[in-house]
Length: 305
Length: 312
Image (cartoon, rainbow over all chains, first blue to last red; front, side, top):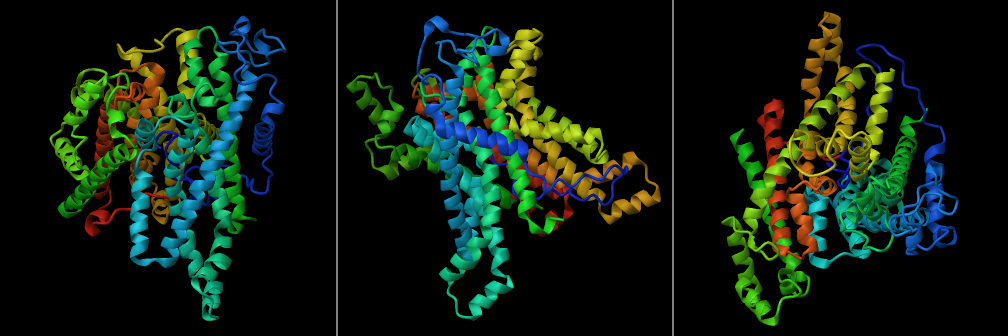
């Protein structure tokens, strides 16, 4: 991942260290925190989802409302006023409002990416895993090649060719993210295919589409959900990185990455311009990662106590 | 072993060929390829001239053959913005990027493996907790924000490092640490679980029972846990060069990343295409080296000529 843009290669893999049986220096056993409700990540994600949906209704100002008389106002805790609780940027735009609009963009882009990439991934996984044979090896070769190729290089070529737009961000990231789904879900399909209830259904005369629809798809849903939650965080970072480089959501629309890039010019006299979107981005990603980890541990019945 | 190397080499060349083809196909699929290569403010005569020079009026398969022939000869075309050939531009910028990438790789893999081993050996203690927390935060905070925070902390508040540009070793530290942050975090996590897995094996128990010293045990454990670690480190190294694009942008580091981003904003398609192809070549080369080093690390791979699965 290489960098955050790239896939987390140990994503779908269960942590190997849940029940330590032998350690070099005997320490405390790690406490099982499986049943615990994910308060932190749940609250953070709920909060961001809510402000994202309500966007224009809760934002005190418009995202493009320029007010040069109030440029570079500091946040509340650093001598600012309630008019602009998180300060203003160099054009006097309210940072809180822009964060809320940026949140909306990040949410829409990452959801679209996850849905499209997930759909492609599921189709490829089922085709490869259920059909098997030459089709399987061809699809998996393609998946591996796509998985290994750096996302950013692909994004650069795409943007240089087709220009900057939010739609292009979704296309780039969807094309970059489907291989992870295909890889992980294919092995799930392979596992489910050999299970007794599937054999049973087949002996009773069920055809391929029926088996896939009634038996395979429902059983890959838990794994799919875990993947989605982990990929959501990656998609948010990727959108941020592209926008930061000027390859993502085009200005003047507010996006967290774009706001960070703008803030780069004012690190000495207006650090909040860069820090506020950075903090928002980091907290969201941390929350999705924690939530994904929780989901991963809890969705697997064999690790439950 | 030789057959294994040759097979991998063929695979690497195939990937390079496919990427070159995709880049070509995309540029031709965008509607009017001429617009990509020619600055928008050029006169109609210049446009026509460039079109003929590039051979854009020829049939597509002839263009493709010409394109591949040029690439094979190392000719990446002309840059319109710089009015010089792209190969020269890249060769000028590449050493800077390599310097940055290699420094970051050394920092990331050294501290990543060290923290992972320490975390695994002291499992369940505060060392482990700190290591795990750092790894989680390091993987969640985006690279460009890490860089900005470092600049605010060490170039604006405590002025010990220059905020941007290239110069002495002090200019290298902030960008290299920024670039190293993510690989460091993921290597810490992976090393930790890989070492713990080996520690649970019977041969480790046997060594412990035999009374082998802790240091030797660590050495043996690391060798056995090295395959996944080397895989990830290799993937990270390949990715570092594209990650450098972001870091170079933060610190105005004059590498290929800067070159390509400027190329996009000035619509200098040859530069973009050249950088992407060179970067792919480096990436493929690194993966090749990693694959070959498997063979050296694990005799099973050497004997059967089969790699260990790299994906999840």
